[in-house]
Amino acid sequence: MSVEVKLRKGESIDKALRRLKKKLDRENIIKDVRAKRFFEKPCERRRRKEKVAKFNNMLRLRYENA
Image 1 (spheres, rainbow, N blue to C red):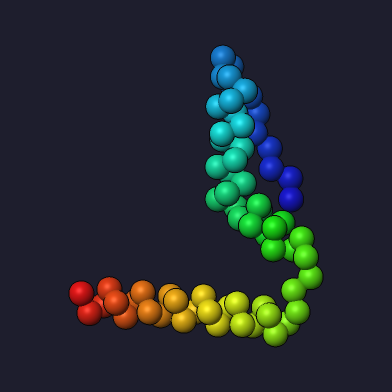
Image 2 (cartoon, helix red, strand yellow):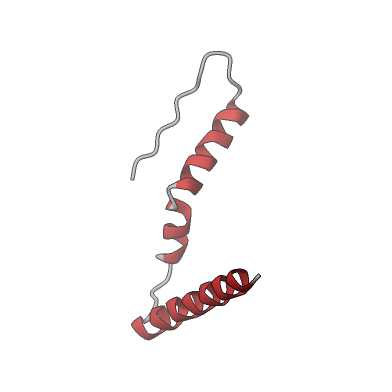
């Protein structure tokens, strides 16, 4: 997982850091690292995925009927 951001000519370091953060966010690298920080039991993983699926289904039904 190597993400590289090269400093453009005349670009400040703050802007380069902002581009790096956006790139990491788009590729879900930070989310993966946080998820893998602690061990998650298979039943907890399944429960979390079911909860997300239920929420997405609720949103889908809400906006289909609107």
